[in-house]
Length: 258
Image (cartoon, rainbow, N blue to C red; front, side, top):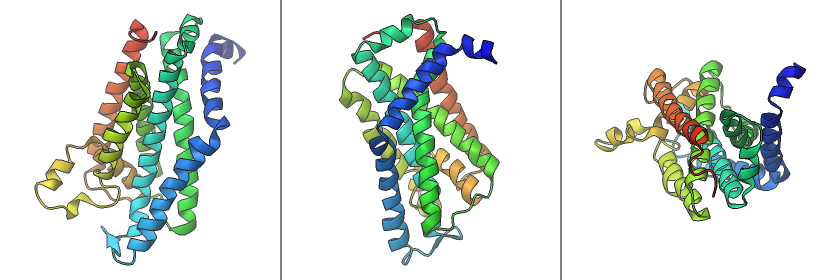
């Protein structure tokens, strides 16, 4: 064990640094997004729950919980890593990391670790709060763990990629505000796409986050607008693309030095 730790001491130190960065600013990195998502449950779930009794046989305030958890975790994993990597490049801190005796995959994983920690903290905290006001179940824990694992890999890797390519703070925020957030809302967080008329129902199936939300919802509620195998396969494919893209950049060193 000591030998294993010694071989990956750089990775552990970098992962600890990224995690510490998240935990030191816990009021901004964890509490704020948890409260924002929880307000959606209270405002939309409990207020509209009197008008929209059920969706797919599930109480409305319960139906929206999985999508909100998935959306909050995805935004956290992406935002944390994109800002962390961009700042590391801007401050030239990335040069010290790259010169350390670490393999490219260790640097890549270490930089992504903070987003994973932040997303997990938000997801667990939001679930605990949701249980206080709803009776959201976990029907398929293995499927849920797999879906959330894919989510973390996908958006943590995407955040690293965008952090490497971004030239300004606006660019790293653009993907979250103009791509991830709108696609999340249009991916069925607050509704089932089965209630949409054609062609909007078919168009929803082009949205990759639609599959992610449904995979997470299946883990919680046992219901999904698409077969869970397809939802997991699509999101896993996207995650593999982002991981391969990120890994290629760290092997080549492309754009890593600002």
